[in-house]
Image (cartoon, rainbow, N blue to C red):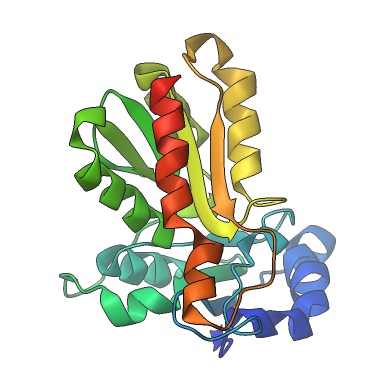
Length: 244
């Protein structure tokens, strides 16, 4: 297990991860039991080189597993599983959650395999699909707009990701907003949105909507950083979805 001091610094080892670790099993039939811990994300005033959400750099690479827990108990369980798995992992850990979120963590060994999402909050009005810090944004929307009866799906894992749970939820609610902290263009939300549009089109009562950060580097100034993340824009996007 190795840890990047900041997830941004992983670019210095990019070739070793995407061209060596990811392909060792395919090329030579060998295991690559490596977990790369990735302190990621903005919201702590750390500037453009210490705040990027770069999970989408790796979700395009077969052979890797990319996980992004949003709660302490799941972070422990997924890390324990990753350490015993034979595959290389990118283990995304949001820095702001280090400092702001606490919760019960079971003692002993309780493992959680990647590829299974969790419905954090059931609802019937619309589906919010999120991961990492964006799960907590989604739960804030639930509290702020109780009449919308929002269902929140925490992906927990991006490669693989749980298409079945997402599609089942969308087919129940008929509306969906895919949100993540990463910049919008090229973010992993595009993969989710295209899958929903292709496989659940006839169940939709509104276009699939996405939300991500502005397509700029992460600002240093906290006020600009908050605008970059754009929770106020997220609320407007949700209102547009529900009004459709």
